[in-house]
Length: 76
Image 1 (cartoon, helix red, strand yellow):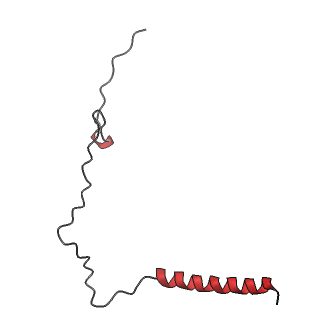
Image 2: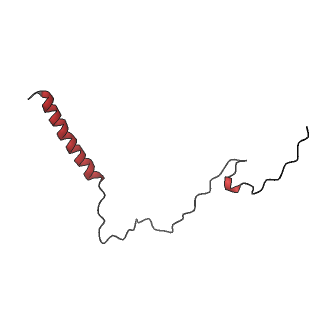
Image 3: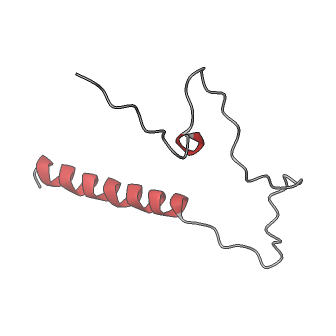
């Protein structure tokens, strides 16, 4: 056999072995029956977003004025 055929066979074998290891390491594990789904952090869940301090003059769009006052007509 030529060296090209041997190289192709070895590369194919290495590819199969690599795919096997990637597939087995990324597979999700089956949960145990006695699992109570406790992540162990404890405490009360606080799902409110944090208050972000904005620079002066910058407001959140939800805090914008609800109604704009009409501007006076401009005389030319």
